[in-house]
Image (cartoon, rainbow, N blue to C red):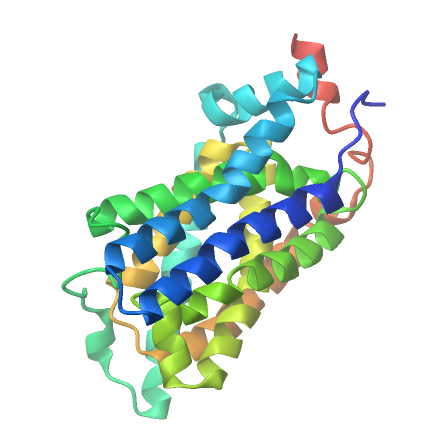
Length: 282
């Protein structure tokens, strides 16, 4: 049994409070007509909150194994399974292409398979591509650095994926009121598109969990996958209507992944033993 007790409630409450304080301030600043750069900087601080919380939690834990585990997840290249990352990337490409072709049945255009001219937003004047990269890295440091493990320490990976998916979706809520964000644009289109985004996050959690576990709980693997997903979502010219179709396809993909990886998702041997392998390598 591991000698560290994960505290998921404390972690997620801290993440939500700190993130939402910054994001609500960003929404108010943007609405007040002040410099949009200030709003975007506040948004960046909110985005960083889970990562800061995760790293602080680990470094102040006084647990050598937990600290070593974080280091290994960040830079342990030798633990990565390239084929599973490639499978995840190709799989998501198939999801996008299939979604576009199915959307043709609902009057959408094949031109959606073209690339957009630019990304939908950037933070504080930072280039859009760098913004996407920062978002992927920062989020994964928080969620895979401590957040996902803190839930998986008590549940199967299947149950953890459901819990984390809902939490991850709710964490995004304030973004729908920050001008200039992708989420703000969805709110302007209608509540249905907001709900579609929130719902889509849950099955995406299963895809990310699969990449995470298949790569020996590698944060780096999740960063690569997250970056690819974000880039595809931003650069492929899918309409909001097609992204509703995409949500259905992602649900089907998540179901297939669980069905073909039942042992991974439903085993409970890791509960209380997440750090055991890391301890053995010290």
